[in-house]
Amino acid sequence: MDKFPGTNFVRGAVVRRMAVSTEGWSVMIRAERVHAGAFLGLLGLRGLGATLLVAVGLSACAADGATIYSMGDIADRAPSGMLGGATWSMQAAVVTVGDEELRVSLFPIEVDGCESRGGRPKLLRFDVPRMEGEYPLDLDFSALAERQTITFVTAPGRNVVATEGLIVVEALDDETVTLGLVADAGDGNYMNGRLTATLCDH
Image 1 (cartoon, rainbow, N blue to C red):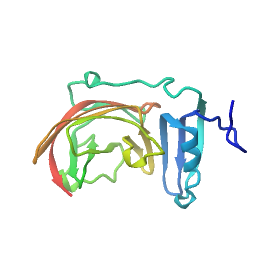
Image 2 (cartoon, rainbow, N blue to C red):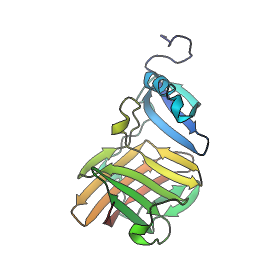
Image 3 (cartoon, rainbow, N blue to C red):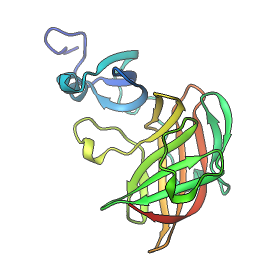
Image 4 (tube, helix red, strand yellow):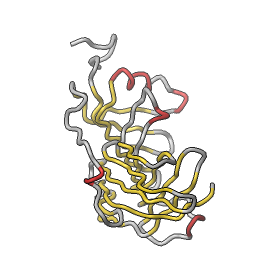
């Protein structure tokens, strides 16, 4: 196999899972379709102070093990599942309007509406384009501006990022949004369901 010079990375290989750690926080990423060339490019971002560790290894097939989700896979209930290995169910949602995106935080407890911006563990966070449509989860290091992920905040300073799943903006107007989502980050982190929330100004 054709390897990158001076490394054990095979051209066309795929990073299956990796951990991203920085000084104050850590992220576990399940990446099904991240090419090794793009992964090596990320290693050059030393300005971020990031240490990247391949936790599982490399797969020779980009589609190997990946699950393709559709709108029919999204359950007709409030988002619920597992977070950090514990049963989790959404009790409140805060959706803030950005210039081109919606910033979504889902909580397992009641919160103070638009005044709650996150900053606490045991929640889900993600951004999604401010437009009706289906948005498969993906983390492409060659096009970071187009990445689509869901973050499971499992503990202070510890996030698990799902790159396998789907977000659907089912309905959107000037006041409310209806979203559907299904996400699987592995390691006891899985979520599925629908919600309607009032939009908050940024």
